[in-house]
Length: 504
View 1 (cartoon, rainbow, N blue to C red):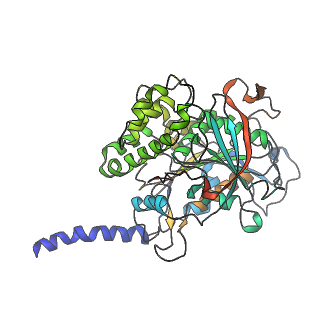
View 2: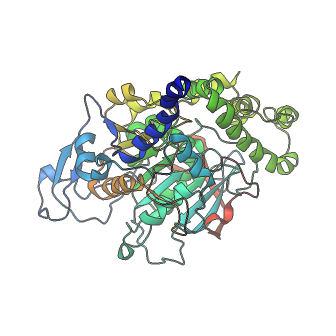
View 3: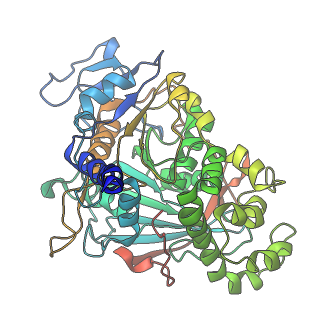
């Protein structure tokens, strides 16, 4: 009997923790710059229209692509990222109650992978394949398709998306946002376009070179943005990144500073310090037992799916000599795959190849770039994310236009609330969609970019050579359209192999 009494608290504790997890309101901790940069923001509907005055001369503004957008001129005021979010993204501060049957970060993450989202947030994409100057291929999936909405104005805002590690435009977390941001206003949506830049080899994008992608390589994003800004020169572009794609987008915004083609950005579940997260995945029991080998298996499945194509390419001096070693790996962790594969071919040379995965991780980390971002930027992470264990609160405090929201719960790309594990009601709702949609609208319609910055307004930033459109002075940033018009039906581009952690 005494033993039972001693063991009782141990047995009851997990139940109490689970009950506390799902019954309380989970309100994010939001971190802001200590010395923020003020930027201009239009007043919302109801404010008097502007006649004309010097203080509001930028109300009809040149957006990040150097063009005018179609939103009416309203009174403009200066505000910090804190005021911007408090006034335009109210759902961020209300919090949410997680699904009662997903009472931990592990279960939230597991449902991202295992839940049936095939009938939820269905989308049609129109795919364009771009050839990059190094011979690689990018797949850009646009929604709505031209046929679905042929009359959508050219200056319609565009949500530019980068997905997770081995995902694509078919992912439930991508569709959760785009299905609502790109729905017509008459149906309760924002009426925007969405364009997913699928990483090389992902979502059935063909592999045509030995170069792949990585957490730190931003040149493919630049190539995609060059094409989008050329095709839709009047449209404001807002970045949306998930997991690995969030890391790429954060680095891009920090590298470009005031000259970004994206006039704002929001990222979810960004890994930030790749070194610290790698240590966690390799040393802590559950991460090293479950997540590290699962993520490594995802990358191995991706590379194995393209072996036949790679063998037909002329051999290169970076990856080709490593193929036997790569294919010999058995149940590798993510770091083992990165050491055998990514450090050699995860981007252009220089800086690739790296001497080790650790050296690659130091270079690829995005947290150091937060202080250089100069456009409105919001990052949302979950404190119980079993894959990401670091949030750059210190870097955010030293930044200028960035805010970081850390929710107590949500797992990795989960944030599920409501729903039921049984019945036909469909998967639970994602809370994070609300603040993301509010931010997208505010960034596209209210924020007024400084017209002194951004790419040149007259196209002087690009040249045409040998069939490619190139960014002037950057021979590796460019594109040539290979094909366009292929229709992708929601999850139709899902790889044939069923990855255990697909979606992460």
